[in-house]
Image (tube, rainbow, N blue to C red; front, side):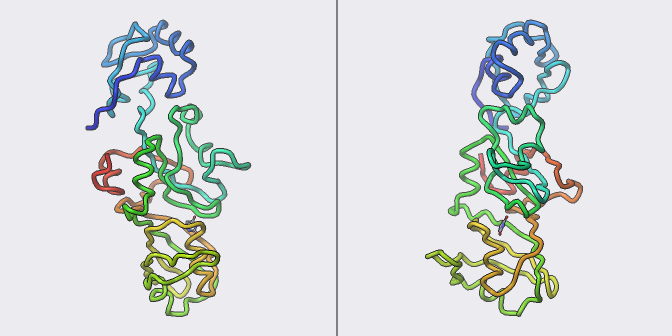
Length: 247
Ligand code: URA
């Protein structure tokens, strides 16, 4: 279990979105915060921020929110945007309101288009985020693709060639693996994350993606019982499936 630095209790709670420093001090003075079953009296007590803190600390009788270093998977539904500021429904609105006030803030690890559904990771751990999206680490992403027209038959070879150039780009795509599922559907697995990559790849071979869904990142699959719009906090073991030796 990784050990994180210590933080003053009032700073920890304020950073988790429970209120201003002054507001969380009031919570402490009202005996609303416990650690290992005992009321904490001092708002300036330093707390070792371990991964299991939510199991050991309560606020107003409820388990503490996940401490910093939070990683979660969201089943992104269609029609929501991976952005902090664009207009319209945002992925962050699917999380508990307090989680939107966290510092450091949660960010998406890469993006899915508004009209793409599926596995989206989010974290407040900037270093982990960069390791997962870094092309050097080759984290694979698998998409289930539904197409407007039947496959021609040469797509898998073209995608695997490492020579396919997308419009307005000057570097060919790294090889992409394609597994045909039916005349009009396939899995594609890629390690890059270029803008609208899957849709543009199929446009480059004269087709059109009608439905796009990501179901896997590295060895981590989107669980079948996680409905669109639902999220789950990841364990260290889950994270290691995305990126071995991640933290
Ligand atoms: N490729 C796309 O075209 N869209 C996505 O959301 C992800 C990959």
